[in-house]
Amino acid sequence: MQARDAIGASGAIGTSPPRSLEAPSRRYGEKAIQGLLALCAIVSVATTTAIVVSLLIPTLSFFSEVPVGDFLFGTDWAPTFAPASFGVLPVVVGTLSTTLWGMLVAVPVGLLSAIYLSEYARPGVRRVVKPVIEVLAGIPTVAIGIFALIALSPAIGKVLPFMVKVPPFSAGVAGIAIGLMIVPIIASISDDAMRAVPGGLREAAYALGATRMKVATRVVFPAAISGVVASVVLATSRAIGETMVVLLAAGASPNLSLDPGSSVQTMTAFIGTTATGDIATGTITYDTIFAVGTLLFAMTLVMNVVAIRLVRRYREVYE
Amino acid sequence: MARHENRPETAREAAAGRASIAVRPEFRQGANAGAKEKMFEIENVTVSYDGQPAVKDISLDIFKNEVTALIGPSGCGKSTLIRCLNRMNDLILGAEVSGRLLYHGQDLYGPKVDPVQVRKMIGMVFQKPNPFPKSIFDNAAFGPRVLRMKDIEERVEKALRCAVLWDEVKDRLDQNAYEMSGGQQQRLCIARALAVDPDVILMDEPCSALDPIATGKIEDLMVTLKEEFSIVIVTHNMQQAARVSDRTAFLMVELDATERSRWGRLVEYDETEKIFTNPADSRTEDYVSGKVG
Image: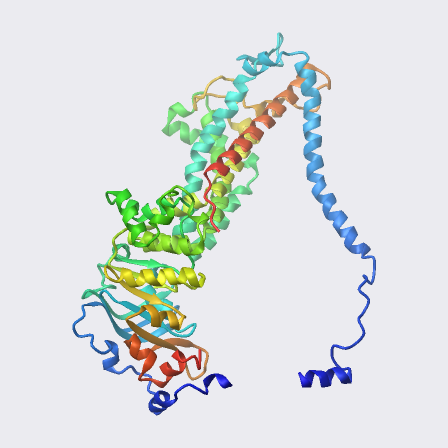
């Protein structure tokens, strides 16, 4: 205490008069940065809003001509023929079919890859394998579509003829190609989610005499379920929205069937083939594109909401 | 400065002359150990991570139905050593155990020994309570279910009773374990380990994340549990070792000549009372009296 007083008296430390507590400047730079950041965040929100609005306006005009019931429950899809028919079910089923076959490939392959990467692979192996898997996600979908049409379809048709009834087009083959394409999404995000599970939970299970597989399936996987479901939802959205692969490999004939061997037209493929530059605005064909787009948007939205609800209900929260 | 003035110096002075690192043979068992059944026989065990030794040349015997405490400063390898006893070190890449480690006379690291089988018999409780993010019941039932045991409900109840947790949780077994207090979580972790009927329970600083009241409960629990199980506990809390253990091993950090690498060495192992009142080694005396570490 005495020493401190001595220093204080000499004025060396701690006794200088208090400085101003007001900001030395108005900090315009900081405010500008804050504004810029907010603006960037608003861009996404504004884009989404603009898309929804631009989808809705022609959709409303479409429904002023075609009854909602005829559209949603009709089984004849011939919007560009005369007489036109606007039953959307065949293209919805086409989308469901390719998505279903895709997910049948992507979910098991993706999840098992994720379990391998996070629980079994040595760090050296993981360092190589994970980036290679992720590279697959970067391949342009048009390349995957051509691969499906030229390589996958003949190969699968030879081994399993029921998968390709109208060569080279097949909902099943297009689905498998989509599935391979979205494996990286599921594998990579699920792997991250499982690796984020605290090591203490694994140790606890090992210390009870659990094998590696039991630790992975009974502890790590359930604890990571929200991340796993998120990856599957994201992958499903990609599969539903995928256009190029189905345009090239699934054929173009609307077909109310889940048969993997048949040729189908999906909602996205319909939009892709119909929305060419020379289509006149305000025509019924023009409005149809938007009605299908709105339905596509609604389907992915509902799926997302349901998935979030499910995750909230079943997830295991660890801290 | 005043802290040490009243402390009797005689014991330390008596031991001051000796500085040999090697553990004398009689320390390996401690006194009066002849009649007790040996649970673990640890002989010249060295554990390395990526070639760097973490503990060197440890030899000691651990006895059935006793609480054995491993004490020592941070980095002395207490946790490394306890993790050898149920082969948890196998899960760490680059970990290597040399020397001999017998469990009821069988070599724990023998070529045909399956670490999964070892861990069924030698359970473990960790530093931070680590219940699974599941219900209280599912936590206690995890081991029995994984091991396909029968009578899950009875086992769960028995384990929770053993861990003196039953009365607190019997009406909310389906509640998530994370809704419990830290002390309850740790007792649930003990119950979870007990539910598979282990032979030994290893506890790696089980109270370091708990408050004194929760710590007291777990310490009481250890004393009752040793009737049925054998317990090995790592603790950096010397009072805890003094309160609960029958036998105490004191480990210390040793540096090589360049001071670049460090590892743990066993300094002294004896009955707890002797370690705390009349240790044979001056370094033990300095440590337990709070002079260093």
